[in-house]
Image (cartoon, rainbow, N blue to C red; front, side, top):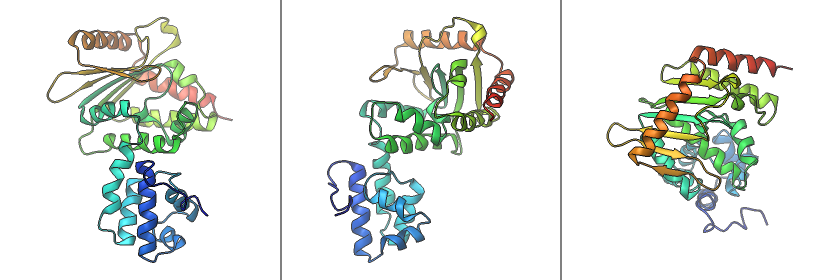
Length: 270
């Protein structure tokens, strides 16, 4: 008996998607290898999707509908799969991030999720306590769609130099990730600055984000050990924005930050 045969469709939204895919495929009389071929994926990947071991992309969900003639069934299911891949406490963050017109982020340990490569994201998540790594990787990459939409938010990122120097996933993963940062920094919608070690003590005591919107008050998000905390308290938001201004004041200029990223990337070359 295969893993797909033993799958409990009520155990998770991903399991329900997987069981529905197998059911519709069998009812349509399409062998697994044939669906894989027509969906332009490997049979092994399709097997993992039907066993709820891998989260499909949105494009793949749409391809399943097209091949199986399922009238948008999997396209409609897909947003639920991604939504429930996030821990419940993190979903409000994702919703605010998607609505924001300006995102300000400070990170002192890892690259912000919006700018992570798939390999880097996987390495970060594998080091964490959750066992749904593949679902979380897919969900993290999905968040990045907001940067590719017609009207993306302005993204302001301040990184401690520690983020560039900390080896996550090994040299090859870090080279790819630093390249992604440099690429993002070239966009006029993004500003990336690095607080160098030479700055010494600075205002960023821990990771935080401030979201600004077309209408409504700014919202602050601070990271924590078990879960983050959202706040729209004007005093707390004002304090966070003051800290952000101080961080930018001691950070390298955007151009000098790109140069530092390039230097660190060069040092990683074999």
